[in-house]
Length: 441
Ligand SMILES: Cc1ncc(COP(=O)(O)O)c(C=O)c1O
Image (cartoon, rainbow, N blue to C red):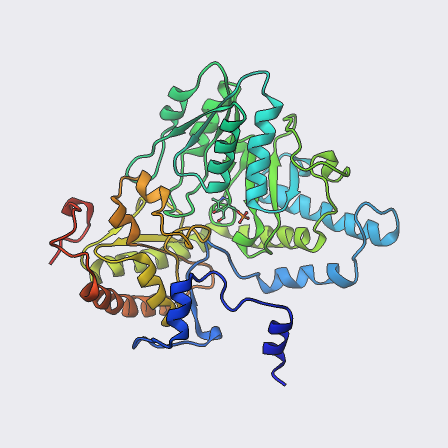
């Protein structure tokens, strides 16, 4: 019996649920182009901003908490005490990794979206009597943007700061937007689509001096660049374990001592009464192990990944005409390479790359099922058709030079094929040549 297939069927595991219908039917029809097909183990995974593989040591650290030390951390018996001890250890590990003053400043959540929701809604409602104005940016993740939009319906006022052509806001823009009734500033540490790093320490300085709460969504930055919450002067920081080789569905919110948030989830007294619900014990243990591993020797690891990222970026620019890099060359996440390829659709390139065994993304994973262009690419000033032609490659510690070279050998042929079929071409497109790094040949 084919037990793996049988089990997958029994558990109702979807074949590849993130694929849109077109992609799926294309694959099923067996329309495989010439690119080399790979089996699962042989694939090149360059979508680490969407999610990462759980590190073997992280998995190892979690396993006993499913079957051996499985007590409810609120229980007083030995099993419960063992579980509680593990959670408090993970809290210490997490606090140490981001330079928090105390482990009590770390609250475990169900992931990055929950951390963002809680920080923003919790701060807004706890400070409603002081004011109702929130400052954010146009390029935040939807976990922030949709939360802000929801708060607008509850009577809050939100300023969405525009960004420059590389996706950055300045601290001065933030300072200029502050009003007497501003209660919260929320600006992401690093952009999930184009990797732009925001001037968090400068904004933190302004927020602290004006006594306004400052939250940063650091979901893409934790484990990618060194972070210290005290140096950055942030009051709240969101993270998500699955972005740094930990498990999915678990995250944390750093909340500086003395700051009061309204709880988002009501019920039991877990997380000091701030976040009800029996703790995700193995997940929290995994988060603690993952953040410890990810932040060890981070400067060296980031430099190695950035060198590979530059090899990829420079290789794409030199081998494919009419390509532009989205986001800055300096001041970006070490693992992020985002490019727009003129005249063709990112989705078509993704499909062809996938068939060649290469996983990338044309935006954030949450939006890639939609045909709307990315709000981030539009915010940096790209016309719709150029935004549609974007590809995001995000590397990890496991990425090798050979993998990057395979992508560089594969992508130009895919682009040439798709351009040959494209209805968009030099005669129909309205994009100005200055948008592109390489002049059209
Ligand atoms: C910047 C950013 N914030 C928040 C999130 C949401 O995190 P999670 O998937 O853990 O809910 C993501 C996920 O892609 C992200 O990239």
